[in-house]
Image (cartoon, rainbow, N blue to C red; front, top):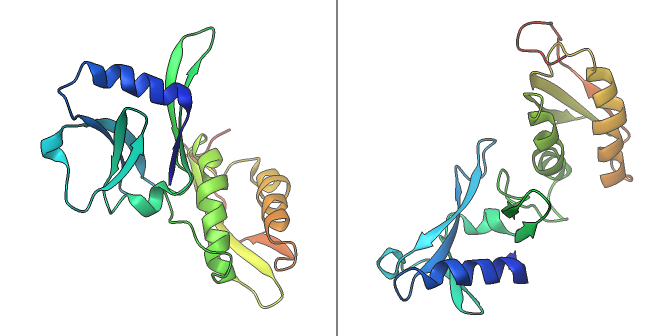
Length: 192
C-alpha cells in the first residue's frame, strides 16, 4: 500500500524517539477522492489508534492508515530527500484525488482516473482543470476545461500536445482523439 524509503524510515524513527513510547505515525487523506484531496503524516499516539486502522509495520515503528484513506493511498510513496537547499519529507499519493481503477473498468472511468491522477495536477499549477464529459462511439473523448484554462491562449496546445497525446498513449486501442467542448472566454480567471 505505502512505500516508505529507507531514508524516510530513519527520519521517522529519529522523530518518534522523542515521542512517548508506542507512538506511531498516521498517514491520511483529507477529502479523499475529490479534487481537493490532501495527504498528510502526523504522530499517532497509542490512544489515537482506531480498531479499523490498517497497521503497516516498518523497522522500529508502525504506520497507521484509517480505513477511509486506505484505497486512496494505494501506491503512495514517502521519501526523505536531502539536497543543497536542505532536507524535505515528500509524500506522493497518485490515487488521493480519485480511487485507482482496474484495467477492466469502463473506459470512461479509466480516462477520468488518468485525468485526475496525471493531467489535472499539472493544470492545477495554472489554476485549471479538465473533465471528461463523454466518450463517443467512434472513440473521441469529449472534455471540458475549467478554471484558468477557460480563456487561456494556450488551451489548444495543451489539448493536442498534452492531454490528447497522453490519453492516446494510455489508451492506444480504445481512443482515437480528444475534442474540447468548452466555450472559452478570456477573463481575470485565465492564466496567460
